Length: 136
Image (cartoon, rainbow, N blue to C red; front, side, top):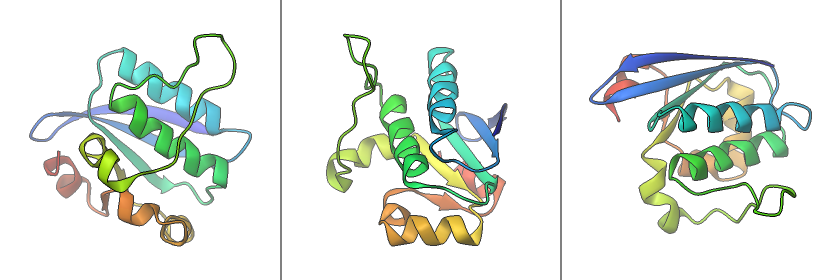
């Protein structure tokens, strides 16, 4: 998994997180940790570019939801140093926080998985960088 970041300007400053490779059990924590680092460094609006991600496992899906929680200001790290905490997705409750994390260019197989599990309704998904940036 390769992860890189760039800064773009939409209506607000947007951090673009480019992912390359599968998001699965061996990489999902890297994705979460890098997103947390970006948030800690001041990023508040994140566009996740999935154009070079051929596969997302259930762990990868969970990482995308966790990133939404991070960018809403919620801590996912437990106070006792154990495993991160996760909770079920609630479209109404999560609506305000979804405005800060959007997806760009998911490959067809990834988009199919997002659709199957209902995350396609949860995330704003864009196929054009300029349109995605203006949506923030």
